[in-house]
Image (tube, rainbow, N blue to C red; front, side, top):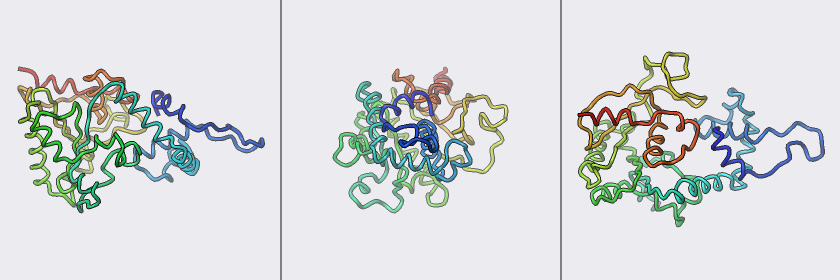
Length: 290
């Protein structure tokens, strides 16, 4: 956990003694050590039992502390602190657009609507009837906003499961066609000249890569920590302002997208990772050359 995140988390944690109230006993595991373990599980999606192999914290201790913090409203307070710092104070408008969202919100989700792919599922401030809910919208709203030139400053788009190109349950041709539809919606929008499109994936489509990730004992130079990065994934930048195509060999990771948003909007970094990675400006320069 970065020092920046800990500085936000520590003030909202319940206060406890570090030792047993009657004296003796085993000292209480420090909150920060438990926080490192909890956020490791949240970021990687691993089972709690896998923590025992990381030496971060015993899994039972981390899970007990997680349940106690949930009951105390810690994560709701943490999210509120983040919203106040990075949204209300900065005034940056954004939306998350998801294919099939309206049907799911109405209680009739499509067969391939993926609840676990939606962010903010467990944040009360984004529940029905809450102000934050306005940021969670159906993908059709994205197309309508693009056509009118009313897209927010930052848009995230997650297609419906059948159109996300995932092997096994989705159609690659249908997913590719849908991606082209999304890109054309922006390129034909009144906002086209001021918009950078970033297309990327959460998987890499294979079982082997000849280029080792940074921090894995190879020669690849880049930012790394215990959370990665892992095997390379595709990324494509598109803009009507680009004059040429090309390949950028700069080492990036997914938080490079976040760093690009932060640098472009003059926002402070959220963590030590996005504070250190390269933003996407080298790739943008390649497309902008005459």
